[in-house]
Length: 367
Image 1 (spheres, helix red, strand yellow):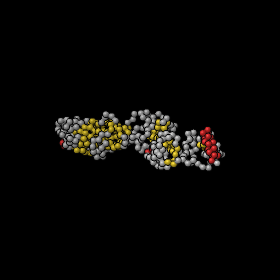
Image 2: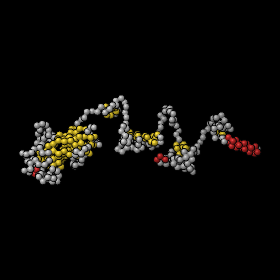
Image 3: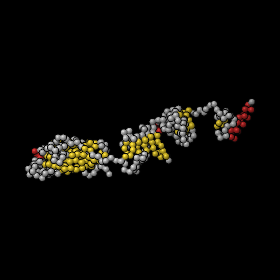
Image 4: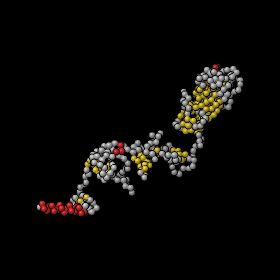
């Protein structure tokens, strides 16, 4: 009996060495298979149970002794962190790292997507999309769609779609039949966008006190808030104003120097301090010269002008005034009195013959 067994084992080994194939449950393995686990009829009632191991991370070969390309295991552990994390499931090694195999493969030549199959991640990580091994698009774990950038752009934390087109104009193209040269993108009440011809240039009116505003002035504090302001949305604006200032304090009167000097107005983002806005040109203040050349002991100044500014968010802009004191010109009074700012009517509270003396409005800067 032992002799027969040894002979059978010898012939089996010779068969393996000749055919380089092994069949379990069959003595006729498929000629293209190194190991055939089916029965002779090509079927099987049992499966292949992969070795169960506890991986520590995709970049760590443990518990193997090295990364071996083609090695397949079933991982039982949840371990590692970030992009190297592993969770229970089937993994294959590519010689550099462990790669999770999907239970449902996404076919490159099309898919039946019934029953809501999906493509993406099952953990709290971004989904990058590459072409030519270069990332072109990314869906972040926060639900943002990034084009040509791997991280959200500065200032756009709340934006769901972000495009980094570098210095090349034309990052967005919308062709829906409403497009046309010179049109602007607008939306309806539901947020549906379309192209429309730009609206006519519009004007925003400022607020002017109904009664006179007075401000204490000294030679060490020659600036004052007029009480006039205007609320503007983000954008570039031409802020235009007509101002009428009267130095009516008793200390402002100096016989022999009536109506000497000048006043000016400028803009601030604060009503309590001189905090300049961002200017859109070199024009930062408007000089208003004396209104009369004689016959009055008060310094009356009246003038108009425009100051271009640029603001990045809705902003209230305040109008401030300035009067040259004897700090700058020895012929001017040493002011310790008040400046009266013209109201919506005029310096003395009455409407001017040709309309209000004080005006404030803004128009958008267009190119």
